[in-house]
Length: 430
Image (cartoon, rainbow, N blue to C red; front, side, top):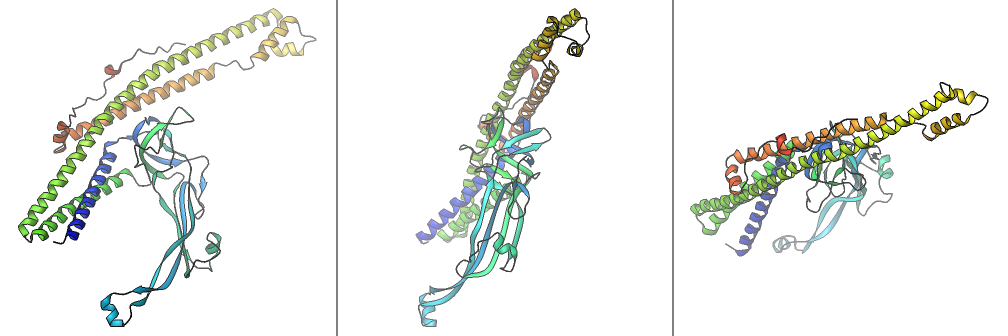
C-alpha cells in the first residue's frame, strides 16, 4: 500500500477516535450532572433548565420579537464564469488548457450578534446567565428570500449590490426569545454585583452550552455520534488491515484491533466520569455543610438585630405614653391644635419627628423570609447531594461500568443523614 494512503487512513482513524471520545465525554457530562433548581445553584459544574427572562429584552432586527440573544445575517447570491485549468486528458479533447466554468455562491453582506445577561427562571426562582462566549443553540425566528422589488431588500440590507450579484438576497435570524424554554450546562461562579451565583464562561469549562433543546436530545445525539464514531473506527481498521495484507483474515484482526482501541478509550472515559462523580459528591456534601453553617451564623445575627430594634421601639413607645400621660391628652393631634406647645408637648413632638415610622414588623417579615429561604437552600443542597449519590451508586452497580468504578476507587455512598451534619441549633426566640 502506498505510504500516502497509510497516512490518510491513520489520520481518519484518529479523527474518528477523537470524535468518539468527545461525544462520549459530553454525553456522560450531561448524564452525570443533576439538574439543579435555580435558587439551588452552587459554585462549580452545574446544569439548569427553565425559561429565559429579562426585564429589558433586546428587539430582534428581523422578526421584531423580544429576545435575550439573537444572531442575524443578510446573504447575497453571486454567479460568475471563471477560467479553470483542465487536466491533460481533457485538454486533448477540447484542444485548450482552460475552459469556462460557472460558479455560484452566497456572500454575507450584513448582520450581527447581540447578547445581554438574562435570568433563567424555574419553579424555585431565578439564576443569572451570562451568555458571552457560550455555545448557543437558538431557534430560527425568521427566514426569507427576496429580490430588489421587495421593501425588505434595501431596508435591512446594503444599498449597493456585490460583484456579479444575481439580485437574490436571503435574510435569516436565530434567537432565544423571552419566555423560551432553555437548557444550560456550564460552570457557576459568584456574581460581581451580588452575593449570588451566576452561570458564565470559564477557562476550565470551555464547553459552556445554552440550548433551546432539552437535555434528553443532547444525550441521545451524543450517544448516536459516539456509536457512529466507534463503528467507523472499527470498520476503517478492518478495511486498512485487509487492504494492507491483501487478506480477509487480516481484516478480522484489524477489526479486533480497532475494537480493542475503542474499548480502551471507553475505559478511560468511564474512569474520568467516575472520578468526576466522586469529586462532585464531595463538593455536594460540602455544600450542605456550608448551608447549615450559614443558617447558624445568619439567623443568629438577624435575631439579635430584630430583638434590639424591638426593645428600642418598645422603649420609645413607653416614653411617648408617659409624656402623653403627663399632658393629659390622648393624641399628638390634640397638642398640634392647642393654643400653645408646652415643654412636655414639645418633647412628644420631638420624639415623633425623630422616629416617624417605628415599625419592627418589617424586620420580623425579613426574618421570616430569610428563615424560609435558608431552609429551602438547605433542602436543595441536600437534594443535590442525594441526586449525586444516586448517580454514583447507579454507575457503580451497573455492568460493566461497575468494574471500572471499583478499579477507580469509587466506593458506594450513603444518602444524606441529618445526624452526620448536625450543627448547634438556632433558637428562634424574639
